[in-house]
Image (cartoon, rainbow, N blue to C red; front, side, top):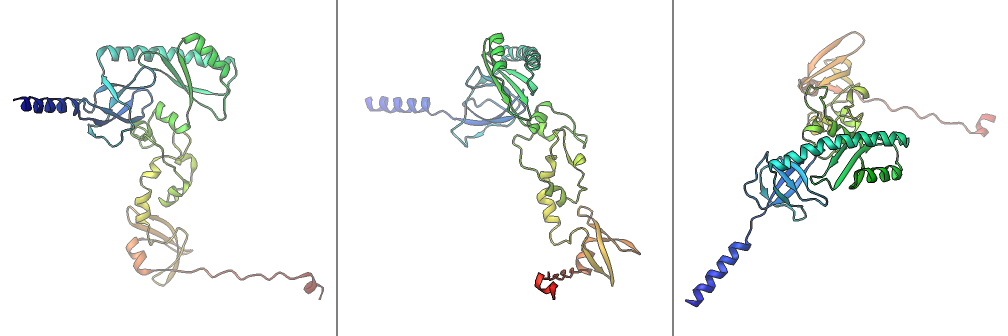
Amino acid sequence: MIDLNIDEAIIIEKKETDIDIYEVDVRSEATGRHKAYMTTDATIKKGDMVVCESEYGGDFGFCVSDLRDVTSEDLKMIERKATKEDLEAYRINEEEAKKALEFCKAEAKKLELDMHLVMAQYTLDRSKLTFIYTADERVDFRELLKVLAFNFHCRIELRQIGARDKAKIVKGVGPCGRELCCGKFINDFDMVSINMAKNQLLALNIQKLSGHCGKLMCCLKFEDEAYKELREGLPKINASIEYEGENYRVTSMNVIAKTAKLENRENAIYITLDDLLSKGHLIQKKPKKEVKSETPEELSE
């Protein structure tokens, strides 16, 4: 009887300590960025408003994924699902942060600081106020920091961000007519190079290839690998080709429609890429002859 009670106590203790831990992605309503948090609440689902653990006062956000197994133990915890009171406090903080932003802009102008303020954000309990800005160079904001701390009586952070991060916060509509990718789902920005535009056979017009941030559009990265595969084995633009007994120059290609345009002085034809590969022959350019430079002794002779 005594042994049975001990076993039952062990089972009860195990049940009490054996808590399932999950991982979920939470998007910050203010910055649009999302990151993973841990939670022990198995009822949390995609779309729920939550209050997350932070160094100062808690972060308010939305779950953008379903629960999954924990992939890293180095994650902060979700404190709780957001209540109506939390949501009301967040909306009030939004309005107060807008007023704080206007005050900060005015003070920065007085101090003649070369910085562009993008947004301000309070923590849920308003123990910390963060101002986010862009600048071409390093800004000495020590005097501004003193004024802000004196006026708002909380911890102040001035955080510099890049042009892409600004576009993510401000959001907008791209040339495709859809919401900007950075504002909708991109969380970390990969490097985008002009070679990606070349791989997609796009006209190298920097103005048309640039997004709202002034940098090369992120969507160039999405299709880069697909275009590399589609262009494998194809000649380069302006390559000289012998096709059906005549010499042509490849002036354009559409790897999606699988067509190419060949031109010479007398004619221009459209053919399929299959015909280009099977019937076309690349004309190798002759290497330039080396011009021997004469020495002063040879010139004197």
